[in-house]
Length: 193
Image (cartoon, rainbow, N blue to C red; front, side, top):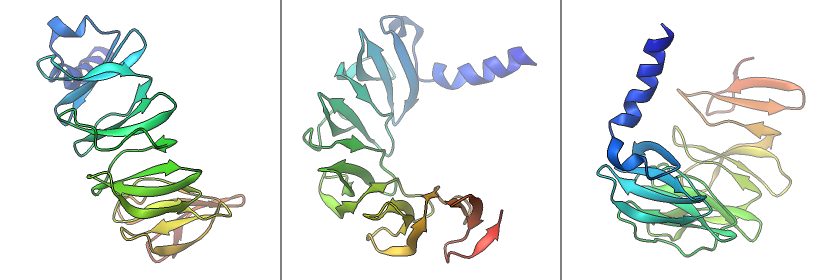
């Protein structure tokens, strides 16, 4: 049984990773959006299924591509690239997360907001923390550090009142308030512990 589990775990990587070229890298991630994140000599880059470097390994860190975009750490700041290797932003972000629903949370000057696939501000940088969208809502924290949920326009759907909030999945999300951990729906109704 253990051998079968190992084989199932390795097969997704092999579908994008050609054995001939993967050996020249110290690390090769699974292929998403047609690209694999690679690491060589401590630097991150991205290659296509044939092993052609689309983004040369030159960055300190990088996220896996999602929805055709990924963020890389360029010096002390983060910037975003599309899957053709074109930069869609300058290196201006203190933190950067993956795209979901066509927008990505990022931070600059100590505040989180969301950018679109053109690199433009979609939701203003006014949150103390934020995460990606799932089921149409995203966890975000106000200036006092309390978490709630915003919609794709940045409006509070669930007012910030929690110490922590997870992403919604199948219409429910785990939240933490004080010592209590429980699940809510999108109308902030408690579903279960």
